[in-house]
Image 1 (cartoon, rainbow, N blue to C red):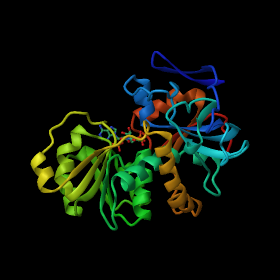
Image 2 (cartoon, rainbow, N blue to C red):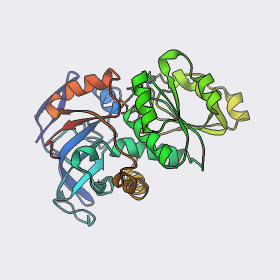
Image 3 (tube, rainbow, N blue to C red):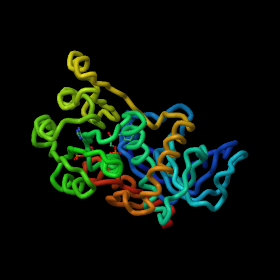
Length: 323
Ligand SMILES: NC(=O)c1ccc[n+]([C@@H]2O[C@H](COP(=O)([O-])OP(=O)(O)OC[C@H]3O[C@@H](n4cnc5c(N)ncnc54)[C@H](OP(=O)(O)O)[C@@H]3O)[C@@H](O)[C@H]2O)c1
């Protein structure tokens, strides 16, 4: 099969061995579209190795057609169109994945839009509701609001009745976030978000992909009993935690990564999405925001776009490009 190889940090679309399998409980997908995630850029730069046993090939999510199913798989059949949350291997013509990580497309969806769903919506759902335990009416602060994850999280907040405040790096991005339902906005290049978020009412939950650079300010705006869910380190990994503030305000700091979770845990998140989010996608109440697409052999250009922080929503790669 053809797949992306990393050659001295360059992305090269070339012939490689197809993955073995499917073994019991697995399926082989013929990939139509692959989603680009920030993690792919980090893996490519050598900072984010795949978890043990996962493919070395980049790519955490795809859409495609089931080509083959292993013993014991009864939910999926050859010919089914589906999307999948992967631990790796998506930038390729074929991928083999545990069937629990594969879900049908929302009603009315094509393969292109479906490739934009798994990673962003699973991350947003996991951290808002499963790790963050949002209770009725609680208020949310989302950093990197115009990212793939951010654009999904804004809409989930809206759909489930949680006011959300977003930070992002340009006024265009903030306008897009407002359109998706954000009701507090702050341009991160205009100083600290603390006063703006406090004036808005503070946050009961913060979804934070930034880390060190935001830790002190996040603690300042986190309400009593608030949860700070750390999902990335774009602003560094070492910072001082104010334990006094944490203690007195009963704040909780939660570290969270989706990629290394076992198939059963990924399956549980996808099951929750099937129940609570797929019907809303089918009704058009929520939508994946697709910024741009490139053919897979131009993955280099797609990565450069994401690296420049230029995307609003998801960037996709056409593999077969089937719609
Ligand atoms: N833990 C997990 O399980 C998990 C899963 C998925 C994603 N993530 C993390 O979630 C984040 C979003 O992922 P994605 O793939 O959706 O990203 P994305 O679409 O590539 O967007 C990332 C955005 O983050 C903002 N940003 C970049 N550097 C920043 C910095 N130093 N401080 C503040 N903001 C910065 C930029 O937007 P602005 O111009 O608006 O600032 C950039 O466009 C990433 O950090 C990713 O690693 C974590």
